[in-house]
Amino acid sequence: MKESLDVFDIYAIVHELKQYEGEYIEKIYQKDDEIYIRLKKEGEIFIKNGKWLCISKYREESKEHPPAFAMTLRKYLKNGKIVKIEQYDFDRIVIFEIQKEKRYRIVCELIPNGNILLLDEENKIILPLFYQEWSHRVLKPKKTYVFPLSKANPMQISVDDFMKKIGKEKDVVRDIVAIGIPGKWAEEICLLANIEKNLKGDEIDEKKKEELYKSFMNLMNRLVEKKFSPVIVEEDGKIIDVLPFPMKRYEGFQHHFYNSMNEACDEFYHIISSKIHEEKRKVEEERERIKRQIEQQKEAIKKFREEANRYRKEADAIYANYVLIEDVLKGRKENEIKKRKHPFITIEIPYEGSKLLIELDTRKSVFENAEEKYKMSKKMKDKIKGAEKALEEAKKKLEEVKIEEEKKEKKARKKYWFENFRWFISSEGNLVIGGRDAKTNEKVVKKYMKDSDIYVHADVHGSPSCVVKACDIDGNPLPINEQTIEEACQFAAVYSKAWNNFSMAQVYWVYPWQVSKTPQAGEYLPLGAFVIRGKRNYKKCLLEIGIGKVMIKGEEKIMGAPPSAIKKWADRWIIFVPGNEDKNKVAKEIARIFGVSIEEVQRTLPPGGLMKKEEKI
Image 1 (cartoon, helix red, strand yellow):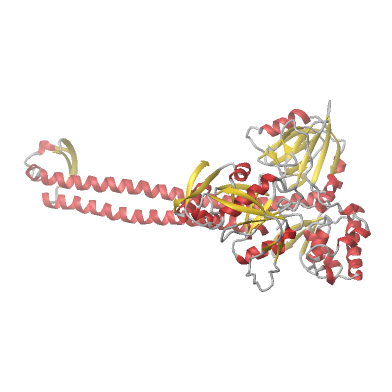
Image 2 (cartoon, rainbow, N blue to C red):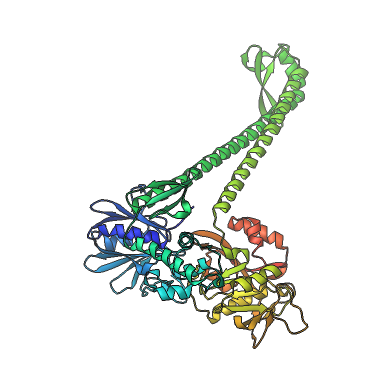
């Protein structure tokens, strides 16, 4: 199911939004990371940070005080005139220019880890929705705004450049993605050209390249000529995609057409978010119902326990005042009776230093009255057992609801390709991946290491082969600086056998061209092992690992990383060094603190005992 807009969607949306150039802003609203810009004429522009943008009719009224970001937008933009709306460089970035006494810009980054920013006429940041910092740009007030590193712009590629690109990557679909086409549309180009998307470069002849280019140009021309036919695609009663025009891949699926891309996107987002909210509401109602049931059972147990104690106490008091009660029952001490309600009477008798009111049955003997009280006490104790059983069942149901909710969240949570390996995001934003075993060590190097990356390995048995990517998690180019290399070296050391035996370890890094699977004559290289030729660049690394919860594309992930990286990306974290505390016990505690599964935590922990060094939780 679609979670965010791609460049094709945004191109169509921005084209339609241009009709609002010249309109005035009446008010701005905010709910969490969602912004609504209400226009004076009609309509509201909806922006979901990092994911969505369209004209919307579904804003819910809120009585909450507007957040600081919304108040700042109101201060600078209320009554401002929208003079320009544009898509930046055919990327997932939309810019609104607003004129008041001065000119301002709202920049909407509809990308993972995106932001919404208010800029002044000198391109200085007045306020971002979130403060963020990378090696190449800082999103904080008074800083000059720098755009994210862009991918290639397919609108500007020539036929010669297109032909040269085909065959450069692992397969043809990746070749097309490399020129700036979203993955889904790259597959569509292959489908339209009747070419298998997994074909390798040496399997693609000139004729096939020409067919690919023809399909590519047909698709791009449809965009440029604004031949839109907005549609929501449905499969088995569930909506799965919204598009500026139909795709061949969805032939045979149910299609719902709309008058505009904005309308289609608004309906799609509303249906999806409404369904999510309804499911959450039902779960919350069930949870609250069970919680009420638990409280009721607790109250019942308390009441039954008090009643059981009272009846037992009354029975004991009857035996302690046997003669007095016998005289009362036989009518010899009428003056002791406080209340009559045939056949019952209430008398006051001394017991354990105080007075006790007891109801007696005049038809029964002293012994029978006492035994009746004991019987009632036992009955209350039986009720306690029943209530305690019901309480445990209710608690079990509550836990089942929680587990089911976690399963749904886990199922809905997107898993990224790098999660199959050890991974972390460096403090400068680079993706670093490492193998978990011989098989994944092999895969990390042979499949994912590119010429611009760096290879890292510890001179210790069990060390993972690590690759420092010269890009972020989305493939956007990033330089690899010294800080990132140091973090990657520490990462490689932590997940080696050194963790159990040392406080420091020696790690080296080399360039990809130095890493080979070709052994010396007469030697054999096992799976996951590599030959390193040339100079090794060594670093001594402290054995420390940080565990924390980080946000990736709006989703929370548990990340294990060197302290400098975890402190950069996580609000709450724990730093560990080698120690004697059991790994499984630590995993349970971390899972409880961060509200995640034990399995998620265990995947981030080094191979051995731990000791907590510092924390921010």
